[in-house]
Figure 1 (cartoon, rainbow, N blue to C red):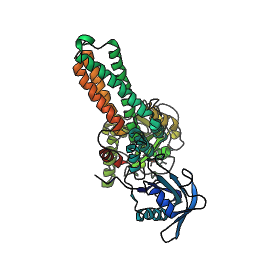
Figure 2: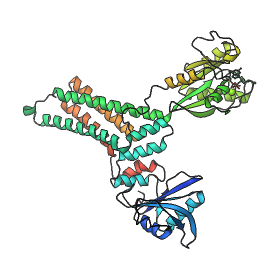
Figure 3: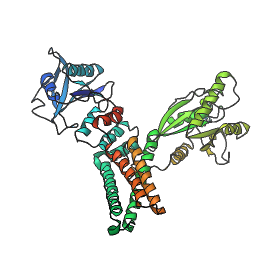
Figure 4: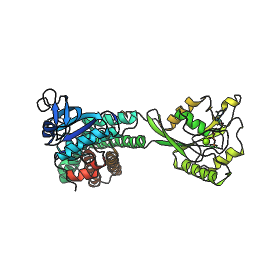
Length: 450
Ligand SMILES: Nc1nc2c(ncn2[C@@H]2O[C@H](COP(=O)(O)OP(=O)(O)OP(=O)(O)O)[C@@H](O)[C@H]2O)c(=O)[nH]1
Ligand SMILES: [Mg+2]
């Protein structure tokens, strides 16, 4: 088990160069560190807690390291519940390194991943649910994911989970009592109890579904662009990305390696892959490219089959279709600008990578294929994968209890499913185990500085 005590420091901002980078310190040495190394222009941070103070950060030998802003939050009114200092330095790797080294020579140690949030949870400043929502927020690559994470912040998700957990406990208690005093209370569940079980089952099922949507939103969707050589796959890929990412030439067999880029459609991530044109390969390299392209197509959630509408649909196109594992989600009749209007191929969407014709329809169709995912979910979704899994197990256990109850298995059997559900809900809420075990299991996967 790692040492989780002492005063810790880490950079709270991402590495690289920028206007400002922030070093965060938590623990009893936070105040003394500022006292000895931060020389304020006005009152020192210890006399003006929670206020930004301008001053000079100086090394042990008195040489200035940077002009900086510092703020001190005195525990327990801080992120972690301990004394926390934050120092805003100029955003260069050198200054941050110098500031952290100064901390380490002062007896402060490097924070482990997620250790600030872990301290906040162990000192009761934040629920596990909120800490995981912060982690999900930092990991959010799209606005839709940020909106989901935000709805779990501020304790609302924890409130919802505890509400469900309390109702479950009450139902368990009522049924335990019936088992203990069958003569007085009767052995059969009351209609209200049955209704409550149904309510719990549907509430948890909705929450579990939200968790699945969240996991999907994070993972994203993937689509491979396939078709005969020279049909305009790379041109369409570039058009979707709005930049010249892939090579385009009039020569068939231009694309070899699979190119992958992530697009955001309706706030959701979509990985688009450009692949080599499928035909009996002209050479070894092209042959390898074709194989890779087909593998990428098989590994994607869907394919877009592109053909050259000015040439029309023929044997080449049928051959590509035959080599796909699943039917394409959409067939695109490209180079529509070269041929007059009229039917191309049944169900194909006419597009032109050159003029952009049909692109809005294509994006709309992709969005529809990705499913109608409500960006905020309306509900307050589970904040992370661990929590989503626990909720989905709780939902499965309650569904099992309900099914058993309907089949008349008896309260005892339903109760054991209910108590399993309760355990999973508690796991979702607070994680099971000691503080240190929780650190290992959950927080150590977070990034440093959180
Ligand atoms: N007129 C017209 N030309 C297009 C269109 N799309 C692509 N082209 C042209 O078709 C040729 C082939 O385009 P690419 O995008 O390289 O085709 P590809 O399917 O990626 O070809 P491979 O990588 O060889 O399989 C290029 O000369 C493009 O400029 C279009 O919509 N209209
Ligand atoms: Mg290409």
